[in-house]
Length: 417
Image (cartoon, rainbow, N blue to C red; front, side):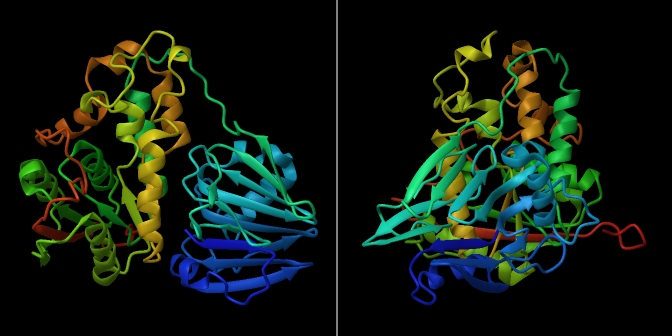
């Protein structure tokens, strides 16, 4: 993920204790005039690359990942820089990833987000000092919006919203087959996979389909199942996925503290991800409820039938905001505390665009039809608990919680990845 801070406060290591855990591999600070730029690196893709990177008098920072970068380059930030010099402010149209990209040029600082702002950026004023940070450092911190380009002028401290629609969407509904949706789903999974990544796996269709896609494509992975409400998690479905993948599956820890709340459970599962597997990347099934189902099956949607004209509802409540914003930020904050990067399967431009383009008949046929079909191909039973989900619980009530851990390795020969 990496974290950053840009400020006019010269105090050494200000907010370092908040931001450094998200980028534990290297901390680097440079001074440009009266501006202090700090980057905390979580090194995952390409060469070990201290940031900011300077080119032609500009300085660049990248939080997150660019999945379509040219592998001949040392790291994905260099691909973003090349596209910036090639296309200017339109360069994000040519990036596929989950990212925040920052360009410092003289007295201006530009912030470019992916469509859902999966990587956070907050603006804060405290006394006479200003701060841009990955995490909120004050109750008054203001979060940048999704899908946007902001420009900050350091001399007069004004913020300009340059573009609030970096990615535009085609709302025609003319794809009358799920084949393209399935292909784009598999591409979304595989591009996010990296060796030693860990999947947060429940008995639901979203993460189960991710596991089956990894199995199908012979990708090694670890997984953790958080059984907060075993009576509301479909253990039959989960067990069937585990049996198919045939990992060494076993209990590594049982937590029976009756006062364990949702915050502690979210910390614990990430702690175990690091202790058990030393993973830097977590794969999630996040986004399926927001984009495909829009919580229709959970009675949390402003519409219950996909209309013939998407303009009537788009962007629907959870597309950018609602649960998308809440859950992305919620899980990101916890992962950053442990030096973990979340890769959210369904927050994928190509996949979402493909889903938008499918016909209303396909969208309305069955909730999450293509994921259920994907699972049925492997004779996996469909979860009987559509209202449940990974880590779902009422934090007001005490819980007994069990964590299941497993690691799956497939190829051990020359094809191993």
